[in-house]
Image 1 (spheres, one colour):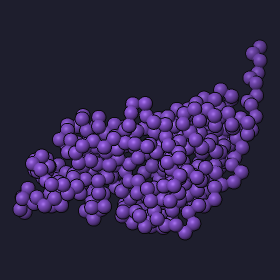
Image 2: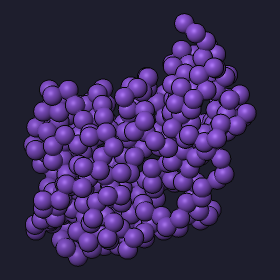
Image 3: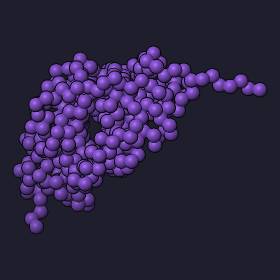
Image 4: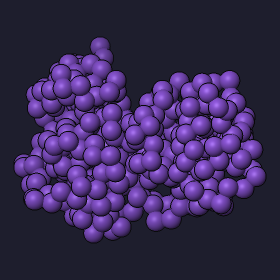
Length: 360
């Protein structure tokens, strides 16, 4: 007769230390544990945002609050959530010649790939020891910032990001829900924002409407990701941003002071691109646009949203308008896609080359 399986190890502080060491091998710098209880505060906040109309069609963890605020939905009998934070701030990025469209720092390279590798190694260890475990990173199934706060990793800044004490907010977050009764954080991080409101005042569109409350319709990180026409009143505020927005982090005193002390490991293939040439994007075919875009999020993997953003950046660039810019805009002013025509006509007006636009 087959002998019974040995009991799983005691999920004590020493065992937790072993899991943290596994994660550190992949560049994770901060770990903690949250209880696997329903995230009641996050659920109430999500429901309030939905009622107030602040999500602007955003799905993510808003899509199914009962699922994204209950770790037990993913792992029946879950007792703890192991949380990991990995820095994504890189020292340098390549800025090619041309009219550059800025990429938000978290998207210079895929920082979630090594984080997922860390979480999967932790998951495999937990499963090998007889526990159930499921990892999550950049996943709609759980509100990662909420479990990070409950795990004592950081506090909610007024910009709704998790701020790590002595480190700031340049971090990607992930977690593992498990049946292991890992010891939870003894205390949560104290609020370190105080009376500071630089992120609120520094937001280029006034999207931070209350402490920790973001109006998605005004948040450029979302505006540049979602499909459709970018409202005209937001286009100037886009500036040279092609993807994402770092402004509320760049003005945060804590992130500015401490962020550079917590750099991500340098990519093996050299410095990443911090910008993309928008004229090249506008003249490239679909396959070339998608290749340049890489693994960055793109609604329906449709290159027209990249071109839309590139037209806005072009309209905000105010360079001496060379013949190549005129040629590109002339093509888009006459484009068969009305969405792209709208943005091209706006760009032509901003650049003072209205002769490209046919009279109504």
